[in-house]
Structures are given as structure tokens and as C-alpha cells.
Length: 241
Image (cartoon, rainbow, N blue to C red; front, side, top):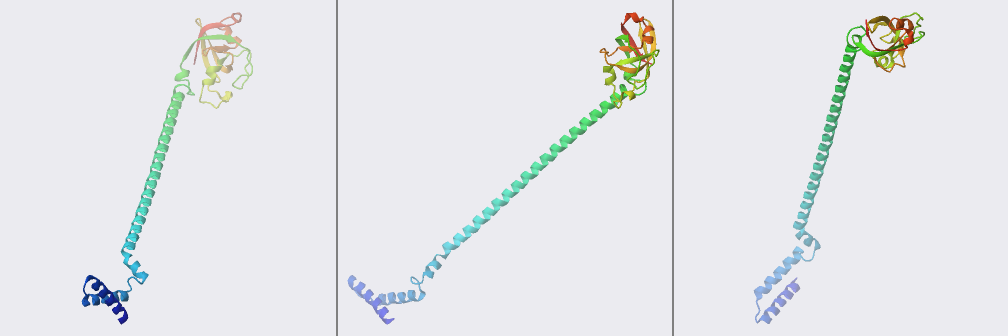
């Protein structure tokens, strides 16, 4: 230790000598400072260097924590936005389904009211209202041979019967499609032509009657309006009775 102090003092002396004088106090101060530095390990122990840089290292740790928190916050906001988007899509889908259901119910209600009106005005099973009260005019009449009919029975040759045009027959609703159960089967109608009339029962469907106000009659019924030799008569009228 004394050797090191002497060396420091010698360096201080040399420096002072060069500058023109020797300062013993300065030499002792330099020697004392050098000994203190050596004891502290500064400049010798590498840990001391890392310790002096610790403030910078602490700053990096804080910054990393800040970045981590920012990333977590961004991820949380993204998840919230995604959840909000899913809720919005679900809400719109539900609204669309509700609109479609409302439209379906509206159409069903319209169809129900229309059917009720048709049944009430056109196809009642009693001879009142709609088609039952109508007078059918401007049709033609001819005759056909009686036999097995569309209502499921057999008509004799002398029967007073008629066949309804296929278009009018098929347009009737309120029945199960079985012609034997058709609402007009065996309903009585009155046919009028040039002041003459005859009452007949509808028992058949006329597949060749293209005019919806026409009727085909049995020969006996046709003869009450015109001779069979006429073959066909025009502009007759008929109605349910």
C-alpha cells in the first residue's frame, strides 16, 4: 500500500516538476482518492458497471410493461368490438325473422278471409247467395243420352236431367274433389228459352260445354223447349231453384 502511495506521489511530483513545482498536498489527495476507488471496486468489478447502468435497465422494464398493457388493452377492445358485431348481427337476423313471420301471418290471414268470402258468397251448400242466386244467360243447349253420371248414379232415358259445363263444375270449391260429392249434384235448375221453361236436376259434368252458361239436357227435357230436330238452341237462361 505504501508502495502504491509512493508511486502516486511520485507521479504527482513528476507532474508538478514538469509544471515547475512540487505540491505534497496534491500528491496525497491523488493517492487517497486512488485507494478509495480501489476499495470500492469501481473500474475493476464489472458488476459496478452494470449497477451504474441500472437506471437505464429499469426504464426498459417499465417500457415493456407499458407495451404489454397497451397490447392487452387493444386485444380487449378488439374482443369487445367483435362481441358487439355479433350481437348486432344476431339482432338484425332476429328482426328479419320477425318481419318474415309477420308477412307469413298476413298472407295466411288474407287467404283465410278470401276463402271465407268465397265460401260465403259463392259456394254455400244452401241455395242462397253468390252462384246459387245467379241467373246464367247467353248459353247454348243441346241434348245427350242419359246413363252413368258424374254424381255416381245412373239416369234413366226419360229423366229430366242436365249436365253442367266443365269449367263451372271444376271451379266450384268447398268439396273434396270426388264428383259424387259435388255440391250441385241433384240440385234443381229451371231452364228458360223463348218463353218456355223446364225444371231439371244436375247430375253430370259436360266436358264439351265451352260456354260457362250452357247446359246439356236429356232428350225428354230438351223436347220441352224445342224439337230434337233443332239439335241446338241458343241464348237460353237458367238458374237454381
